Structure formats: structure tokens, C-alpha cells
Amino acid sequence: MRLRFQSVLLSGALLATSSAAASPGPLVPAAGLPAVPRSEPLRVRFYDPYRLLSPEAHTWLEKEVVRAFGASEIGLTFVGRGGPGVIPATLYPELPDRWDVAPEAIGVAIGVHGGPRSIFLSLGAAERALGLPLARRQGAPATAKPSRRRLPGSQSRRLGVALGRVLAHELVHTVAPECPHTKNGLMAKRLSRRMLTAPGIGFDALATRHLQLAASGMGAPETG
Ligand SMILES: [Zn+2]
Image (cartoon, rainbow, N blue to C red; front, top):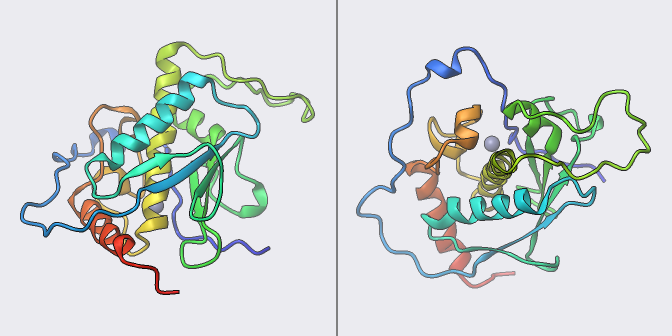
């Protein structure tokens, strides 16, 4: 299968210049937007086939995605099993080399413009972006079963929140493919460590508008 990538690569790379970037303004939707009809909630299934995340980090991940979408018109729910209409999001230790994505890419969405929709996340890239200690060391036997990260609670939270924000970003590419990368907020092309973990980071007004438009489309009956 040939995977078609949307230009959805995220970077947690910490550039020296990023710390000097202006802080984004408050992320509130523009006033006066028309109400959109209630749509079916977006259903997402999170897969951790390598058992990489602690239960705490997993919980933080899902809470953060739900929080990020909370201000939009799109309801979002995590489900326990896949199925028609459910978007799978799978956590890898690293994204496969053959995908030819940047090493700092934490997430990628495929099938954005057709075909099965799917999202992949890289734990390694997220850990590097956050400066977290890596449980897997270079030189470890490839056959060794990776163990769940035993991180202090605060680090589990940071990791879960960061992965949740990347997943939220990729979900916007998936459900609102017309939404461009934005200057501020979670649809920025590159998310700094602060953007990945600081409190109160959400979608900016433009991304929120695109989500609202997508929500109105999702509320429309299927037309084959
Ligand atoms: Zn993107």
C-alpha cells in the first residue's frame, strides 16, 4: 500500500529562536459565528501496540485531545474498539524510516484526501522534544520488548499532554483538511516545548473556524 502523506509533519524541535517567539494571544473563537448543527461526535481509537505509555500518560493524552476539541463544535470521544468511521491513532516507538518523514516529526496523518484515515505518533520524537529521559537506549537489542515508561507523575503528564496535542493537530488535518497551518495555537506547523506542554494552549480562531465548518459538514447527511 502506498501511503499518501499530507504535509502534516509536526516538529517539537527546540530552536534557539523559539523561546523568543511572541506568546500567542488568547485562543478564543471569533464572535458572531453562525451556529452550526450538532454533529455526530468524532470517534477516535488510540492504539498502543508496543505498550509504550503508562496508564497515566494515556489518560492525560485522551483528556488533552478532548480538552482541545472542547471549544470547537466537534464533539470527540475515544472508543475502545475500531470500526467504520472510527479514526485510528497508533503510537510507534519511532515512525518508520521508509516513511521519509523528518526525524523531529511527532505525528503524521494519512488518508487526509481519500482512502482510510489514520494517524501515527512517534514516542521517541515526543520524548526528544520534551527532553525526557529515554527508556530505550541506543544499542539495546532490537528484540527486547520495550517496557512502559516509568516516569515520574509530572513527566507522564507532560508526555501525555504533548502527545494529545499532536494528536489533536493531526485530527484537524484529518477532519478539516482545508485548515492551513496557523501562526498561533495547536495548528502551528511547529510546536515548541512550551506549546506542547504549557497550560491553556488550544486552537486559534482560524482553526476553530475550520473546525466549525467541518462540524457543519459532518452534520450533513451522507451523500454516498
Ligand atoms: Zn500539521
